[in-house]
Image 1 (cartoon, rainbow, N blue to C red):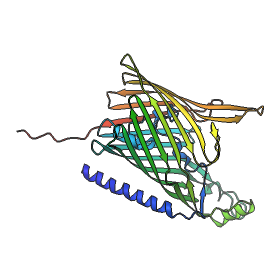
Image 2 (image 1 turned 180 degrees about the vertical axis):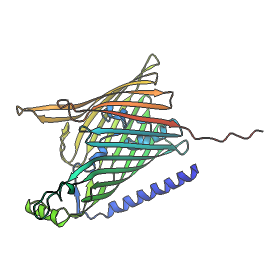
Image 3 (image 1 turned 120 degrees about the vertical axis):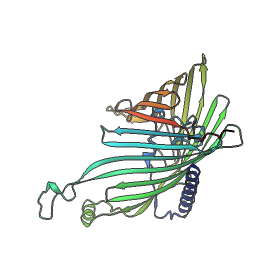
Image 4 (image 1 turned 60 degrees about the horizontal axis):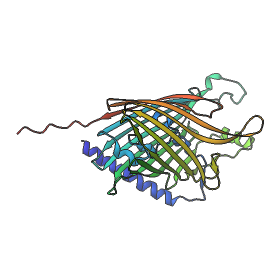
Length: 376
């Protein structure tokens, strides 16, 4: 049963990779549009540990969340099977963000992972039919809909014959939906690597390496089209939205004191290729966004974490340019190497707005049940 699951998973993973690659090279660029913040819900991050470190984790991630951050780290999960769950709410609970993941070792050199992400605003009032053709208001005609983004990530990580080098690959299926008005299906591929050298760790995550695409379709009523025309807005047509590659480089070095206290500083650098962004180093076509984290661990049981990211230039009320940043802090507890509970207090805006969210994530280690060897 267990082996059959792995065989089916491997078949599905290869099928998605081939299909995404064939579609990517066959896209007609005349009908495709490149968006600067396309599929941005996949840049939020998963796991309270990573969020408290300001997403500085591609070099150090070694658990089930590797499927999202760097699939090369999947082979480092300490047990046969590992699962993780996270729920978060943003903007006073208006937006819901849910994550779940499963990872399993294949053998001593390989591991598989499956991740699910949903970011949605539910219960949005639809007032398009509030007023009938005669101008009468009927509150019973108000309906509700959801604007939701989904991602299914199939991951594979493997050790290489080079000491300390691991490689990984993601195949992503993306579903985005705004009620019955608009929806899309998307596919993409990520490639990743990790390399350990003495106490140093290095990581690379190449997201959307083949350019991820979303094929959008719209279902607009005649009344909606008329509103677009009257308000001089362009009526949306079926199209393909492209997400250009982003490269994330990471480095970390572990320091140990008194054989119990571990200090782990981390630096990550995001290099986007979709044009000038409001980050620390901005240019065309590359923009560079550094973020740093620090983790203090005591006997691998209790962890204290902090990070700084989202460094931007903004204009204050006196029309003066200022530099803002996003601070994050968190703690973690490892219970007998079976259950890990992580907490992050993360500022989703910047240090001046201070809209903090409390985020918890759970991670559980499991082992396969093995048959006892027969008695001789």
